[in-house]
Length: 225
Image 1 (cartoon, rainbow, N blue to C red):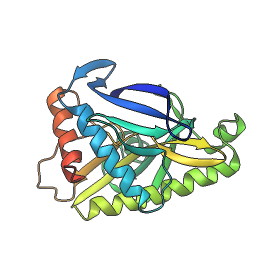
Image 2: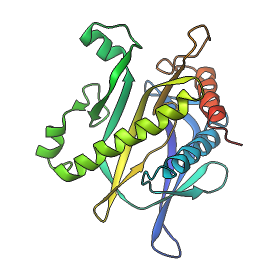
Image 3: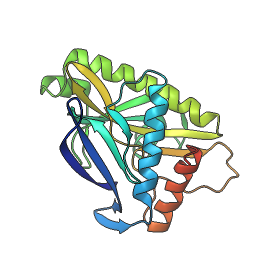
Image 4: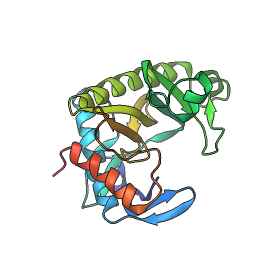
């Protein structure tokens, strides 16, 4: 995942915002890798997709870009879990259900994750039972995930790319749920529809060159100038 620096509680005309600075370093298997210009490109790509989703009435805390590699967000309380949306079978699910890795699924799978360990998958009932999310908020989160997935899947379809996976983080302010997080190599996985096209595997990014190449792919598809 890309490393960030959070600047909190900076006064604005009305209320407060947070400034999130994206650095030129990336965590791979617990090791820090320097990747030239990744901070700027992830910031710009994330800003593009946040604005794009806003056009489809997906609520986000994103306000605007600030400088080359920073984004401004409204302050919110981050929910303690994330939702991984799968449109294609990943390695784990392909083994469980005996299908070829990368097989397109008939319906998207919503996986709920808590923490950063290997055994991070939990259920909706875990979240509700342990007071990590209310029943009503869970309904809002899953509804937003369906919309986010449909909008992004269509976006990439029109660019001859398959959206295999997108990972969403959410926050809450005044009983309202918002999309937060970013759109980086760690959170969004795409593959070309044309199997003959040689593509980098977003699940196997281990070197600075591979991370930079995939970041550039997302950056260019988003038509960021």
